[in-house]
Length: 366
Image (tube, rainbow, N blue to C red; front, side):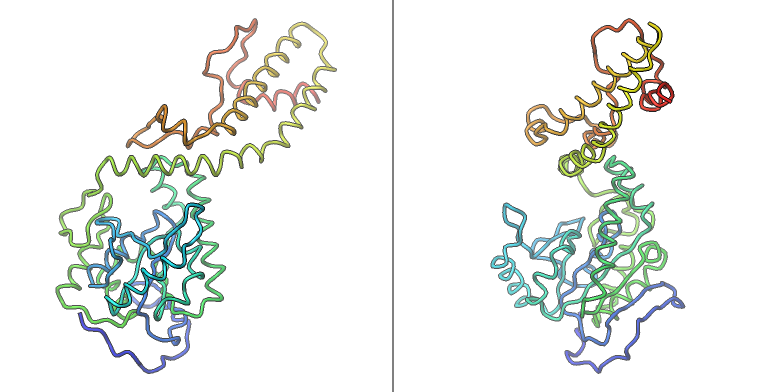
């Protein structure tokens, strides 16, 4: 691959909205110079692997030990407390600078730490891959059984963070819509080459374009052939990823959901007291007792799940697996504890009444 001159002329100042080209895209801060270190950002399941693999096919080194089919690597070294080890990170960056005239990496969560290391990067620039939030959430649901609303929220958080920070980033930034890239792989290759000002061989261009396939069913190496559309990722790797993700999501969202519903618990207790004061018959007493018992079971279950050590439980007992081998613990906060064994009751309520017990209290109380 041929690298263009190191000191190109200053380009015209524009927010380059190329909506008239075959592939809609936007370039910010193009006049701020060339890009020799490129980081690919975007939400998980948002298409960053496709762009990173395409760059590898074009001859751009995307890491010392980039993943074979996820094309993932990061120069950022994290300490045990998740903070960035700047000393080790700088050593990785210096090693890449010395070995490659143009290099980059793809690790989506690095976007939250990128400003800590930009001073060490040589001519940095960024490629942000955008994708419809619903499509991202559906992709996560299909591949890893992540609840739709969780994936939607996670993707929105990343997108909002990027949108909030790019206003202050004085570096070239290319925005590429994932859906557009899949429809126009040849145009995507030209846009990437123009953004990085590189001149790959004709063979590299063809390989990069053939790598971008709209009908792929998973991760693929950058040198995969057009007919090789299957998922190259081993099933055990997918299972390991699902396990780690389930533990992470459960740890981060379990307590949040419990805290979010704490006011409801207090309101429910107050409503139950109002209900108790209005009981006039044995039948009403039996129904009210059942409601209170169900609420007691629910609240106790929430407390148990909130304080349980997820890591220890996962290692000791394993986690229930759903389709595709994905873990179901990420759905635990939504489970209503009516299926587990409980002490016998004189009166069983209908499922609808059990599920909507708070609404029942409201009907009895007012």
